[in-house]
Structures are given as structure tokens and as C-alpha cells.
Length: 296
Image 1 (cartoon, rainbow, N blue to C red):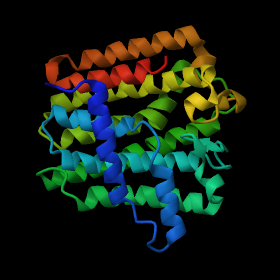
Image 2 (image 1 turned 90 degrees about the horizontal axis):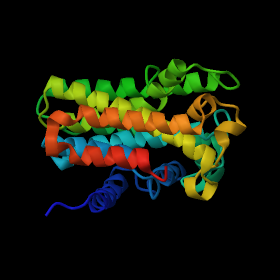
Image 3 (image 1 turned 90 degrees about the vertical axis):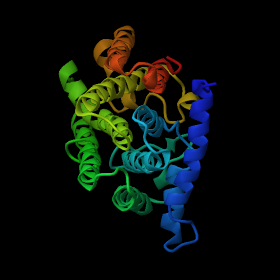
């Protein structure tokens, strides 16, 4: 009998935590403080949504779980690095992440900066040194995909737009462009990298890419609503931070009811992209439900 979604997710989250413990440098290896900070920033926290998307896409394409574990780890390390840097005083200046002090608070700013740098480079080391698929040229394309999703045309570029938008009013297309890069790029990469560890056609990849785009935007819309409505204990990070920093969000632009409608529309669009996959895409559908409906 097929496990329900909660059981499936819990099993992958538990096994994935061990993967992360294995790929991260051990805390007793020099430089110990940096390695301890890297483990602090990554382990024992977060919902692991991006890795779960990679595992679900890998199941869809019949991928080896060991291969998907590596790309899932790489994506999660990049995500963790981005959180460490985003929380620093020169960025969002936050003191709480995943229910515990942020990395620069727990250690210091210089260590946090080096922690983010090291997590990012470790991610690329993983995807370069492990076989992820049967074709070397395809693996090079996968490495490129992660690089683009991470850099100035992806996550880092989105963060730059975000910082430049403080105190400004953005149109809906401008806000979407920011979040397609800042949040959506790495979510799309998680789906595509997981899928490419198995057997997938270009047409199928295009469908999965559109699914990732819709889910990535929906993820951010829901985040904006939760930031406006939920408390700090529920979020595991400082509630209302975007409003305090005068950042443009889907809530400030649309209001909460319209933002909720937008998330539901994106959810429906994401579901539509999976029609051709039938039952094989069930886990991706369940993850889309989880992302949009989480305490929403």
C-alpha cells in the first residue's frame, strides 16, 4: 500500500537529515568554528520543501534515490546559505531563523559570511563529484542550471531587486519578476534537477518547469500572507518583518483576500501542468497542496 503524504514526507525528511549530516564537514575538523556554524545553519530545522520537490520529481522520472539525495542536498545547502546571508545586518538584519538565533547572532558576522560562502561552494562540489545521471553532458547542464538559479539571474539577483525595492511601490509584474528570481528560481531548480536524475523528455521537463514556476510564486504569496497574519512562534522567524522594513509584498499590493486568491489560482495552474503525468505525479500534487494550504 502506498504511504500517505505525511508518512512519505516524514520518511524522506528523516533520511535526508542523515544525508545532510554526512555531506557537511564534521564539527571536529579544522576550522572547527566554521564547520560548526555550517552545521548549525543547515541541520535540525526547516520543512525541507525544496528537497521534497526534488524527491517527488525524481520518483516521477524513475530516478535513483541516491542521486536525487545529492541534488536535494545541493539545493538545500544553497537555500541555507541564502538564509544565512539574508539575515545578516547588511541585508534583512534578523535575529531569528527556524526558531533559533540566526547564524551571525549565534556566532558572529564574519563567521556567518564565511558560512554562507562555504555552503554555496559545497553545493557545487557535491553536484560536480557525484554521478547524477548517465550522460556527462547532461550533468554539466544540471550544474549550469543550479548556477543560473543561484546567481545574478536567479536567487541573488532577486535579492538585489528586493533590497533596491525597499520603500517603493512595485507593480504586480515587477513583484512577480522579483520573486521568480528570489524564491522561484531555486524551487524550479529543485524540481528540474530531481527529474533529470531519471529519464525525462524535453516536453516533460517543460511541464515540470512551469509547475515549479507556479509553485515557487505560490510559495512566496503564501509567505507574504503568513508574514502578515501569523505570529513569530508559528513562523520560526520574526513576524511582520517585511512590513517593518517597508518592503513591497503581495499583501501590500493586493491585500490579503486577493493574495489568497492569487495563491489558489497559481495552485490550480500548477496542477494543470501535471495532467499528462497521471498518478505518477501524485507526490508533486500533494506538495503543491502543502505549499499553498499550509496554515493558510
